Image (tube, rainbow, N blue to C red; front, side, top):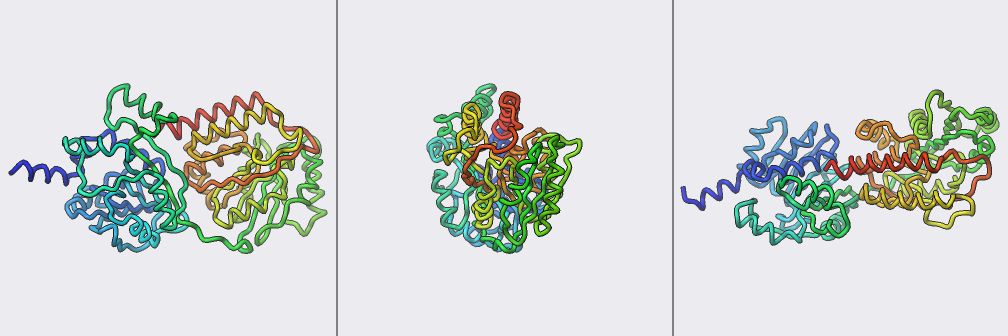
Length: 468
């Protein structure tokens, strides 16, 4: 057989290239597996021999590719999935998918926008589009690698920076959730690969040298009708007797109906008695009291409140009222308009009242905001604002996958933040005006809780940065 024909045959064998570049492909498999919930409905565009589809462990997996021999091989290797020969520009499939994977095939399409627009019919409001693509700075090296037989060659290739991918997604009616880059060395070189790919590639400046760009997007959601959505306001409290009456008076009615759930953390100042008294005084409001019992910490109180809630939307309102309840409609409006699936409050935008936050606390909040923005590849101006909102449906997804991080968070804030980022929920921040306490004293210990925040930062680093 002529050498040229042999090269063409080898070039059509995905198993050959995965074996030749196993370090790179194993890394990619882990990236996708970390962003796809096992047991989901998954579509892979440009599926090759089906290895990546198998790596994300779908309950229903579909792969399409324009190469007949590749699809035949994929069907033989993974008979539990469904594979079809289709041109991405003319996709004909039925049903919707939880995830649509586009791994390195984006640049081979002559009309990327057309493909993305056609995919809209296969999505629902919670579908996530996960795209990985080469950095355009690597164009010369990759072409050289193809020439030398180190990687597969492509006859047609667009070289797209993340900004172009995000713009085409926007034009195709998708909303980008986050983007990041990774991997400086796609080959295994002992010590050097670990240092460059797990440490150097994370640092500002060096990130520009990374090979892989990751973009995760969702279909632009249709606005929800506010009068068709119910709201549960969870108010964790401990020794907040003097704030209970104000909390009930100031928490507004939102949506179809609004319930208020107080979770009392074994108060010693008569807080639970005051809640019961206020329930009798306000028979027109849906108010209930839950006793935290043996549980400790705000995180435990929030989880118990969420478990008892009946509303479509769950929101936390701190009982100290330093983040005003009057701001809750802003969160609800952002949620209903589809601005975000996890709405996080920020106390660090508007000027705050004097004595509202001690100086060391302010510095720590700004520091941890920047740290977690880097760790999570999402902007978080304020990680410890008590006001947070998400849907019951998304909270149940988060809770079902909580074991990934463990039950470690005494505040409750990071359980929600980490879980929302892990599940690729769209994050939006709503500024609030932070006010000074009018009753009681803070339950936050600057140094003890600061140490806990550092421990949680380390957990976030291991889960989001190191284990790629």
